[in-house]
Amino acid sequence: MPPSIAWKLVLFVVLVVGILISACARAPRRPLPRIELRRLVLAALLLYGVGVFASLTHHPLLAGVVYVSGIAACALAAWLSRGIDPEDPPDEGGQDPPSHGPPPDGPDSLPAFDWGAFERQFRAYSRRQREVAGAGR
Image 1 (spheres, one colour):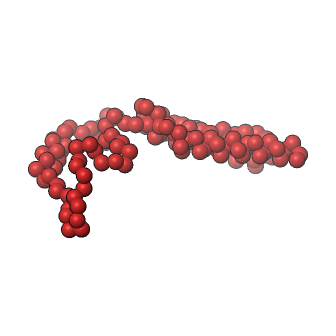
Image 2: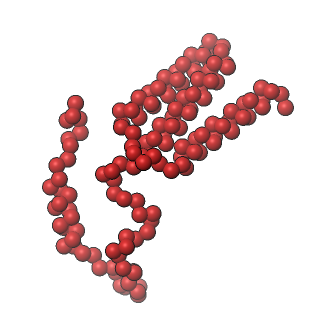
């Protein structure tokens, strides 16, 4: 196998592994601020633009390096965007919360719904002061 093909194959494997890690790795404990994520994605798009320019000016090695950097920046942004926001509801792993009992037996048995608790929680939620989008600027 010629060295140029071997390097391309290694680069392909590294990029695929990087993308899979960004999609499957455990999310960061704290989310990155949205402005930082936007900057990271903007940097990746800028790298793509530089890669296009390098391709058009017949600099394939430079274009490849810049494209790889852009893909890595996008994979990093994707992973960082998966951070857990403290205001998000807790992830229960697809299981019922411990407060719920076993489901009722029988085809016509529907689980009881506590409408009073729902109303109390909804009123408490609606009373909270929420930051208006764009008000902090």
